[in-house]
Each structure stands twice: as structure tokens, then as C-alpha cells.
Amino acid sequence: MKMALRACLRTKPGLTALLSQLSCSGHAAARRAPALVAQRSSSSTSQKIKVDFDQSSGVAVMHMQSPPVNSLSLEFLTDVCIALEKLEMDKSCRGLVVTSSQPKVFSAGLDILDMYGKSPEHCAEFWKAVQEMWLKFYGSNMITIAAVNGSSPAGGCLLSMTCDYRIMADNPRYSIGLNETKLGIVAPFWFKDTMVNTVGHRATEMALQLGLLYSPAEALKIGLVDQLVHEDQVLTTATETMTKWLAIPGILNISYTCHFFHLWCCNLVCTICSCVCQVIAAKKIHLSQDF
Ligand SMILES: CCCCCCCCC/C=C/C(=O)SCCNC(=O)CCNC(=O)[C@H](O)C(C)(C)COP(=O)(O)OP(=O)(O)OC[C@H]1O[C@@H](n2cnc3c(N)ncnc32)[C@H](O)[C@@H]1OP(=O)(O)O
Image (cartoon, rainbow, N blue to C red; front, side, top):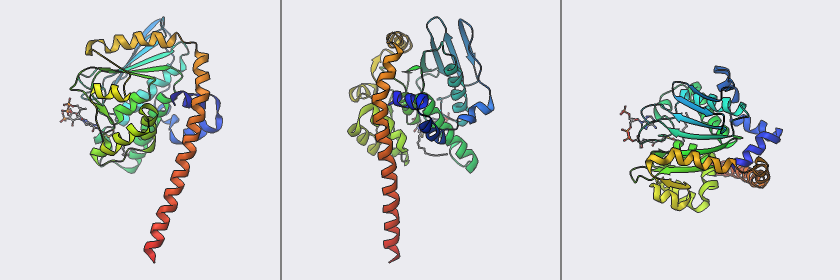
């Protein structure tokens, strides 16, 4: 699925336009212009994001450092998008590992304080930034690996699922999943679709209906994460795994892209049909109440 989005963004102008309506690509760039990373090994830091880029391996490590729990606020999301844009523009950067500098938490998901009691304008900008982060990760040309070194509920789980591969710390105190239902929130369809693409329909249905948070062992069992390692080895394993992924010629990625692109299109059409049906059903209910 991620590769399908990559293909759209690379090769299908029509769909790029469609997706750009979901995203706000201008929003991050408007605040700060991206710059190329030029040194052999470099480190760039915003207040909430630190990126170490090793040009010899072509791999960057993005450390999320927004205390206490890397919650995805508008400011944080903007910093993430800017960092991603910079790396994406540097063609020597082929792989990205995302991890957390906070103890025990990968990301607590969307910043609840940034969603509550704010102006409609702020909410719109916030929501666009969430979509932009999703699109940028899912559509990235880089191989992306999530080094999940702590709990990762809701939007944190979404972030990890947009990556090509997930390695989680094998600590039973940590959990991961889309728990929105438990908070009285319906996860948006693209959260759901991302999970379906990761663990399949039935597991997603169970997860979303019950708002399940999984232990690392359970997450591995359903395929929500790909590998468990000791807490101290999450980042080193991610870097080693990246070497394997980068050994595959890029052209094969593009070939798989075509298969997944077809699936993604079918899915999009189904979603549109489903929305139309819901509107018709809602109108029918409304009409029947009038009589
Ligand atoms: C506009 C359009 C709308 C559109 C709305 C549609 C949205 C649909 C999709 C929603 C997606 C989401 O991600 S909704 C977000 C869901 N997130 C969650 O449910 C995570 C809740 N948090 C946790 O479970 C835990 O905090 C966890 C991450 C495991 C860490 O546990 P710890 O014991 O280590 O730490 P805690 O003591 O709990 O938390 C430390 C501090 O961090 C704060 N904190 C924790 N999670 C936070 C969060 N998500 N946002 C802000 N702050 C958070 C706590 O309040 C504490 O603050 P102090 O007391 O001040 O120290």
C-alpha cells in the first residue's frame, strides 16, 4: 500500500492532485523552506525533531524528542513534515529510521490538548497536518522503518504503520494499537485502511470495534509489528534491517508498486462508493422521518 501511494505520488498527476486535496503540502513549506543535507554525516535539529544522516550508508535516523510523550501537536507534526521534506529532497538519503528519544513512549498519538477547545481554523490546520504526515510517510520514496521503543497508541500506531517495517521493544509494559473507540472517537477511514493493509480485515475489525491495545507479543502475532527485540537493541536492529532493504534494487520496489497501486485504486473506489451509499442512506432515513 505504501508503495502504491509512492507510485501515485511519483507517476500519476491526477491522483497526486487528489491526494494533495487531502494534504496541505504548502503548509509546512510555507513556514520554513527545506534545505539540502550536504555533509557526509550530519545532524539537524528542530526543537522537537533530531535527524542524524549518515551519507555513507544513505540512512537517516529521526529521533522524536517532544516531551513528555511525543504527542502529535500541530507544531510537532509541522517539524516532522519539514524534516521529511528535507530528507526526501536529498536523493542520497535512501532510508529513514523513526524512533523516540522519550523513555517508554514511541508516540502517544494525536495531542489531545491540541484538539480540544481550539478555534475551527486551528482544528482545520491541525487535521491537515495529521493528513500531511500520513501522506508524506506512506508516500515516501525512502525505505522507512519504525523503531518502536515504547508504547504507541492511536496516532502513534498510525505513524508506525505508515512505515515499511516495524521493530518493537519486547517489553510487556508497552502497548500498540488504534484505541480510538475506547476514547469515544471513530478512527477515520484512512486510519482503518492503513491498518487493514497491515494486519488484514478481520484483525482490523476486532481492533477497531474493541479499541484494542496489543502487547508486543500480541502485536507480533497479528502482524501489527514485524519483529521484537530487546529494548536496548531496537535502534541497532533497525539499522541492520535497513541494510537488507537497501540491498534490494530500487527498480523492484517500483515493480511491486504497480501491483499495490491497483489494489489501492480499487480500495479508493470502494471507499467513495461507500460514502455515496452512506449519504443516500442518511437522506432516506431523514425522508422517512419526515413522513
Ligand atoms: C481537530 C480535529 C479533531 C479530529 C478528531 C479525530 C481524531 C481521530 C483519531 C485520533 C487519534 C489519536 O491519536 S487520539 C490520542 C489517543 N492517545 C491516547 O489515548 C494516549 C493516551 N496516553 C497514554 O496512554 C499514556 O500517556 C502513554 C502514552 C502510554 C504514556 O504513559 P506514561 O505513564 O508514561 O505517561 P502519562 O503519565 O500517562 O503521561 C505523561 C503526560 O503526557 C500527557 N499525555 C499523554 N498522552 C497525551 C496525548 N495524546 N496528548 C497530550 N498529552 C498527553 C499526560 O496527560 C501527562 O501529562 P501531565 O499529567 O501534565 O504530566
